[in-house]
Image 1 (tube, rainbow, N blue to C red):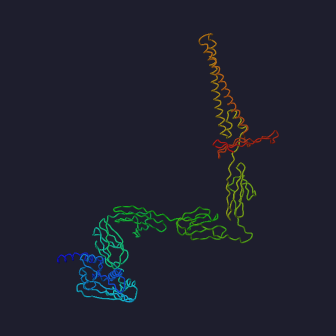
Image 2 (image 1 turned 90 degrees about the vertical axis):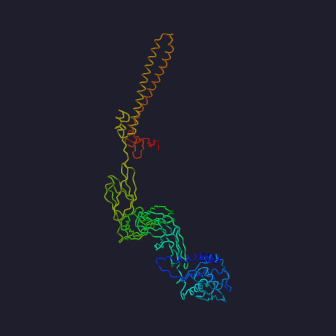
Length: 634
């Protein structure tokens, strides 16, 4: 039974010994491990009115402070309780050094740290002792008194006492803390370790000692398998992490601008595109492509094992707009040393950022350079800040010229409500500013008023915008041809539409008359044949009644055909007569039909009629406009 107990005891301490072994198997970046003493810490004895519920918190703080000294490897409370529980050992009431030594032997450690915290009056007293498990003797004992609240005992005095016990008199907590150990495992093991992007010598399981506190990135690789995580090192502890490994994925990134910067999960990548990120662990990857002056490209990629993803980043210029609507006409504009024209000009799209704009105008002081900032997707309005040059003398004037060379001969010109003559006219010198020009010409539609601005020492050229009035012709010149054939006279004077109507109408009427006449002649012949047959038939024959009916029907048909001949002749005659009247009354004195090719309308006008002495008599003027749709309009 004793042999079995000893064998079971040895098996029980294997997990604890394994922790100590792994924490010393490998040193990060080939640093030599400082030898530490393996100890177990008993819960502190509490007295003097300190609440018992504080015991566990104060004892755990002692374990942390001892580990932070860098002189001890401290067994965790849970590991202690598990081993001692398997042995059936009860920690309650274990206050003597002999009991502490027995606990140390069961745990397989080199030393036991025991102690107490008591209170007398307002003073807290902390006493710690280091017991050698092998010899049972007290190696070291230290104490610290503090007239302070229990909060300060927890936060500073326990640590101070621990450093005294470790032989670190005079050193602060900062000088001995801030580092922790890291034990790295992987599934499967044998992976290469990258810590903070630095490859370490060795394979998992891997131990890194004295690693600075805070967050560190960890990446493991084994063939096609990868794994990564972030670890937060807690000073004075053995920090453990186990990383599962899977087949990695791949992200292939291209960009339309090779000089752009690539950032993946807040980590800047090597410059240049395309970028091929391989052996990526499953998870979310935030991709950001940036370049000053361009829009930022962002994309989130959810990577799965063995997945390949292609990302096409397209950067576009960040742009804004410059508006020149507030600049008066004639203002010369230069943007970034390039002349872009004179106002008015449309808005200009430019790259976002700072630009230099220069504006100048005759009659105003110099020019003005401005540094303007155009913001992304916003409009910058350029203001006019130039000052007008003051006149040097009372008789001095600002003048310009008006040029009429583009007006055809005979154009009547009125300037500022005063007629100045008919073209050709020489240039006219006028005061600089706004003027009203009116032009008119016989044979052209109406007249046009224009508001024009004449700039100082510049010439304004008047444009010709009048439209020719369609000429009206007719009368005796069209009559002979209209007598020969309806519509010919109208077409000869340019009235094609009515001419074609008359010609086609007359041809149709004559054709109708010819057909009607032929039908009538045939019906007359039929009647004569029926009459002869009836007259030659003996009275009382069997066919006598039938022949009589045939004669009557033939007579009726000939009369009907005769009527059609009359109708056809009437239509042809009426159309021919109206064609002659049209050729006579529709002539070039304002009467007649005028067709406007521009508007697609026809005007019919009956002018006043003069008497025998040539004086105006009572007449009628009728104007009707026919739209191209055939509907009469007013």
